[in-house]
Length: 448
Image 1: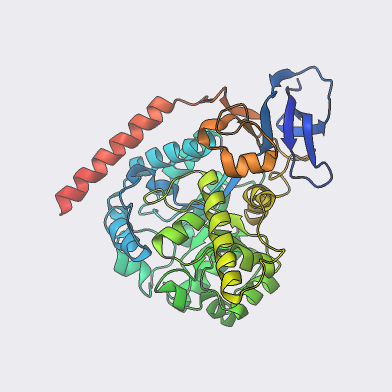
Image 2: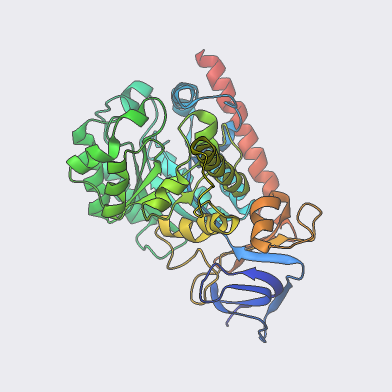
């Protein structure tokens, strides 16, 4: 029997140019798929009244180390250099599979609660084969749409991040591919989270890229950030190794040379930018406009909740403010008017939705409210005092709304948040992640 949900009378921001905005519109969902978007739809369906709500596609977070939810805010003042020592060399070696499960469960539910319906989980905590099993199980239980990016172990900073000679274990990635990702059509898909040149010797770099291409899975890699990696010229090195391609997402990109921007664009690569982390931890200025100027479609990501908030509203505003501040300052210095290419609020919403789906390789199934796509939908309460009255619905989402206004979240046609409350067992997730916190702190003290 066909299952239908009708979202009625909301202010629909479809992010589909062919549909546009409907100040009062309906969205019909059938068996997990968007069947129609129009001013008024008649259907025999479960009706969710969207009066006073802004209806948007779910946000897409294209880069998050979800396993760090257990150690939220342990490094509030950290730089990127501090992060390697305080997190990767201190906490990561202590993580058990149970800790990974707890963190991924709580972290993925945090995403859903904030209207993030698609997540790229950059999971560099695979200290044993049981670690990825735990991470994937937690993602699956939450019902989020996620790309699980299988990363390296993190049992020694020296072994894994300084000219590392240790490759991601290909046999285990193959096992995970076979066991959990035999099809690429499910809610969960697989990618490879690689460290890349500068962090690894060339033989490791080429072997990891070859592994991803053997398994026909996307690649995601940190590049051009901070005091050290910002000087590696990682994309140029990848080019010299003959490894650039459209299957690769480059994260941060703060210190690209002009040549590297051209190489990424010409090879069909994609870009993920984590603006709050980048401005706060010293990665560099978030290069949103640089990406756009080179014909790329940048996406946004949270990165680490050890140091920044885990919601997309924060990232949107961090990027919007940082880029406009940079351009305004340059225009003042040159004594010229600001250019017509200044970022707009509408662009930021597109970057957080459609662009994110594009970067995650999922634009055929999510990122806009388009008939035929899977139903990943978020409703924002626009009657709340921090949002009302609405003059410009896109601006209301980008500049005024926050997590408290995320009232309804639907992923693949399943309601995951209703009337402002997650449908999951939040108490259990919180208990598990708090127990994980206590266990990790005790292990850290014992090792000190």
